[in-house]
Amino acid sequence: MSDPPTEGTITRLESQVHNDDRVSIYLDGEFAFGVHEDLVVKHQLKVGQTLTPDERRDLETDEEYVDAKQKALDYLAYKPRTETEVRRRLRKRDVSPVVIDEVIARLYKLEYLDDEEYAHDYAHNRFSSKKYGPVRIRRELEERGVDRHLAEAAIDELFAEVDAAAAAWTHAEKRWPRLAGEDDPRRRRQKMYRYLRRRGFTSDTIRPILDELEQNGVRSEERRP
Image 1 (tube, rainbow, N blue to C red):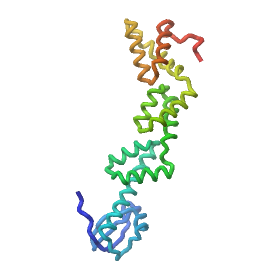
Image 2: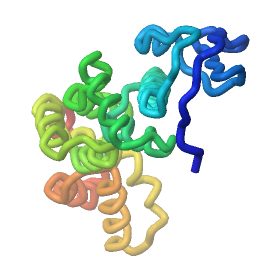
Image 3: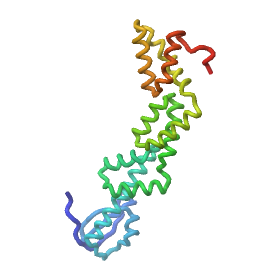
Image 4: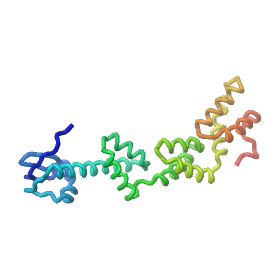
């Protein structure tokens, strides 16, 4: 645990050599700490000013906020994230809960966070790229911290537009021939069933597909799009 801040008089303010966004604060002739340049302006820091312990704590809190916000922005720059993912990231960086709440509020205000839009885009992208079914996409959304109701709404919207059964058939027709070496028809059916379940399809979607595969080996022409 660091020592509690003590009172001191600012004797020098100096831009840091390797990061000109930050300023080194010297108290009573010795380097004390560094802060973002915006905080120098916000707290109206100047040479000759005496900083009380409370003022130093306020600076430290503001510095933690600035640092945490930058970490969150860097994390979001790679790809969209959910609120839960950002919170997890900041907790791993030992950011205090109060500062995390402040950063999250700011990110919403800046429109860098939007779990509803995230759920919509994620669901459509996963179906487009992987042809996953509703169960798997819903689970992935909830694992990423999307509220259950938002996840459900995104899934309902997606599968009102696309055909889950057709997607399941796409997987089944690729997988079924690979199971031809299974001598036991019951085990072949079970393996196919588990395979489609892992890809997120419901039993109601899977069973008719298995029945038709067992009868015809392929999808009948009248069922093809």
